[in-house]
Length: 273
Image 1 (cartoon, one colour):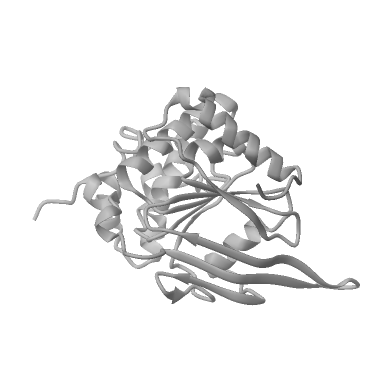
Image 2: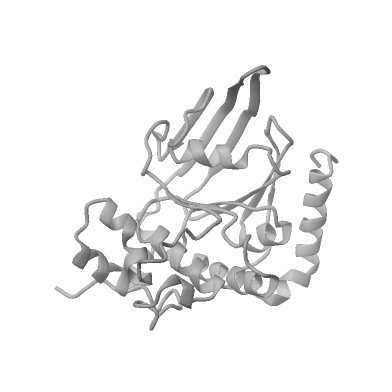
């Protein structure tokens, strides 16, 4: 039997289901703080992410975006409300979604190939089988020829591609991206945004992105949700009705500028409109 192609491994469309992929209802989170009592971080968060949808979330620093991701990924329990993935609760069930943090977290002593198979190995896949799986994907991720390189030999953008490859190869129905390009310079960041937009259109991944970059959110997402200051709740979700494929000219199109202006208004406290 021949090895599966990169498209067969990464294409999410055959797995798309009817109805919502991710549903968050009435979600709240509070922490006990010594000397202060209880600190509320999230309050009545409501969110739906459909199969194949790219959803972005933006909000002020410290509003609880990362706490929300920790709850979705099963690393932290909520204080109230529900989080379900295709109807199944995610509470206390780590490993059900793929989570890519801001830092690439590549181990400097492992080659790029051995970094990308790490999650598969932790999941019980044998090294040889894991390597065969990721080897099909290096060209698709623009990393062909770097399989045996070490992270210090690669640019920041290439390291982020390797980190994303390590994330998506886990074959989870939902990808959580936490400021994946936040540490990159402006030119590399734009290059990576263009690349990710093309990959998402090709493979129809279901993605929830956290970013502080409004332009990044508008360029990549189908829907952008604005979070309030802590305790965070969703102020409004704005649909990004800009046709795909999106390219460099999208950043200066009238539709893009209008959505960017509306999001800025919401973040400045202008309220829903």
